[in-house]
Length: 133
Image (cartoon, rainbow, N blue to C red; front, side, top):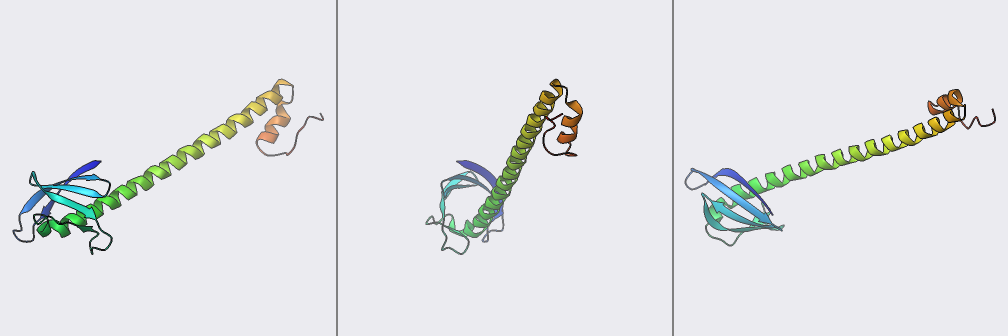
């Protein structure tokens, strides 16, 4: 359940109204100027994507629907940003894990007196193991 507030203008009066929307599962409870005005639902057939049977909401339907569509787009962008951040965190974790593993290998080889070949292998100047030395 989420809630947000925005300002719209009624077509009939040209006066600003404060709209408080509480959403839950595709249904939107609408309060206009702190008075419950009805419920809107997502409607894929409706031209603006929302419909209502509440007469109090009919004059406000188009501007509220536009505001709800804008809010949904903002949420989609923030979800995309969160996904990108999550992917970057995962890549950083995996990269750090690989580096840590390679450093453990390097330290293990250094313990047996093979530090220079292990460093060369770590930075990619040579391939394979120098265990034959």
